[in-house]
Length: 95
Image 1 (cartoon, one colour):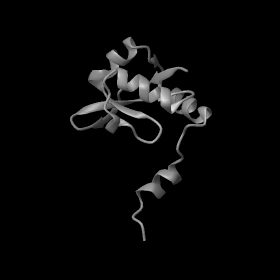
Image 2 (tube, rainbow, N blue to C red; image 1 turned 30 degrees about the vertical axis):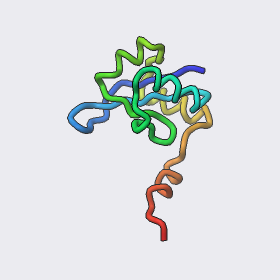
Image 3 (cartoon, rainbow, N blue to C red; image 1 turned 180 degrees about the vertical axis):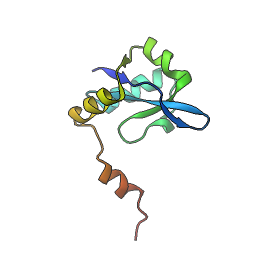
């Protein structure tokens, strides 16, 4: 398993965020994130949103730096990607 991270370019909460993913296993991704001190609340169905100040730490822990485009391709090819339509369905209020 390899864990990948893209540059923190998504603005929110007064900082920027990147994404942390696995190419094989969410279980191992959770283990990696937990060992690096990333809160479980940062998990968003198929990736962790990580603030800019955690970027260097995650790289030093072994996350491989890739572009955002490359990260999206890796996640899609891994089979772990949660499609947008499913994300929308999960956010919709129950009838």
